[in-house]
Length: 436
Image (cartoon, rainbow, N blue to C red; front, side, top):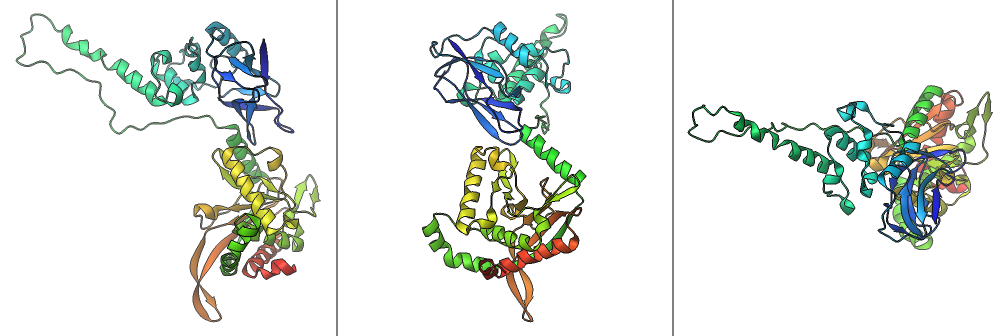
């Protein structure tokens, strides 16, 4: 008996996603709750588990297709055995046509021949349904039969290089017939006539057109929306990191031994922003229509670079958390971001954002507001610079700070005041303990 695999609920307000890739191929055995596909939404990537144990017999959509919540994307046969023949090519083609018409999403300029039928990709071999977008485009462009190519990728999958090599190998023998076309009466040459070879490309300049992921599209849309909507401005300051560096050096071992987490810089900056927001509440506010919303809590969105793009998980009630709780939350979110296991709830909300470009070596930047928030703090790299202290020029570990803010809500005086409060708390961490 075949069981339908449906797209699970993806979170509030999310109605569809993109099938990023299949984790199982037709004919393979799957266990109950074992992931068989990966979906990408506007915010996160999620795995689609098999509802039952059995054999994956049909894949009804292809990688790159957009699927709605509740849509059937595959079927699992509980009575079949692994390796058994799956649905025939016509049946698979019919299923694919229902959800992904031939040519959907294709760019004609990439094919080289606008009349080349997309259906040429659908053969009896099951592995053809798992071609990546780049390989699929190469097959269409070079007009080669993917079933005749031996894949060099993982599990024997085709790569773009395999397709190109097959195309070049197919075209190379053609010129060899040229010498035979000579007239019989021509005088015999003293040496064999040289074969004409296809000219080798001098200094290859390759291009690849890849569809933007849903996450990247959402990032682009939201950031551009922020620029178009907010009256965005950035103010700068610098901060002497000596006191924080000394505190970390003095207590890092005891801190890690007691709490099981390293003491980082983010804990200090989150606490400093929470303290500064008490003096300048507009920085922690937002605009909704013709009203201003002020929050009596601080939910800090921490910008994290993930393999698939920028994500901003939220440390909730950061103003009430201890250093250890903040560091643990950030470390856990960083781990989940790398693994692609962040949930929608973990990235929803946030009243203020902190972005640390310093981990990548950034000296100075103007961060973009994360709507509907009204401000974002940008941290940068620490480097020794000459500064004047007590009339003497000394070297100090300095960091530039940048606060981008929405001038519709936050005045310049408030923005500067907020940044100065952060600077004072970092240069004298005792303020964080006695609430100054």
